[in-house]
Image 1 (spheres, helix red, strand yellow):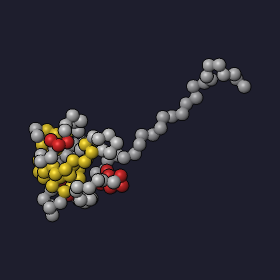
Image 2 (tube, one colour):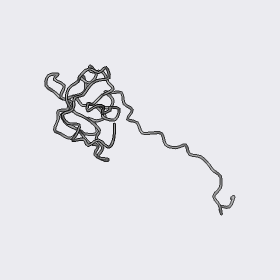
Image 3 (spheres, one colour):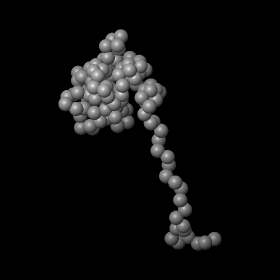
Image 4 (cartoon, one colour):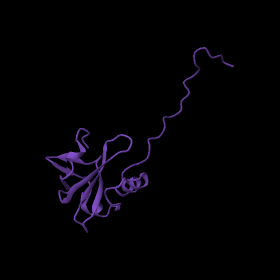
Length: 123
């Protein structure tokens, strides 16, 4: 998502799924603990008056509305952790898995032998 967007400006915006169907209204925004970057939005869906967490990274803000690249049914079935509390790393991992997002770290660079260091004897 656009990193220059103030998370406070997301609250109250309408949210739509990838088909353009209204999901609900952004109720809260959750920031990444390490970076402070907006990571999750809690959207008041109207499904049993609960909020559904959606990832902000693949989402986009367009014409004053949040567009989430997932189907409404997937969002509706997202794990319910309640709002107003901190999301634990385990809860975030559950959400990433629910949305099929990759949470693995990139593989380490290949270890290569570039030859001898200058000043080293061949011993």
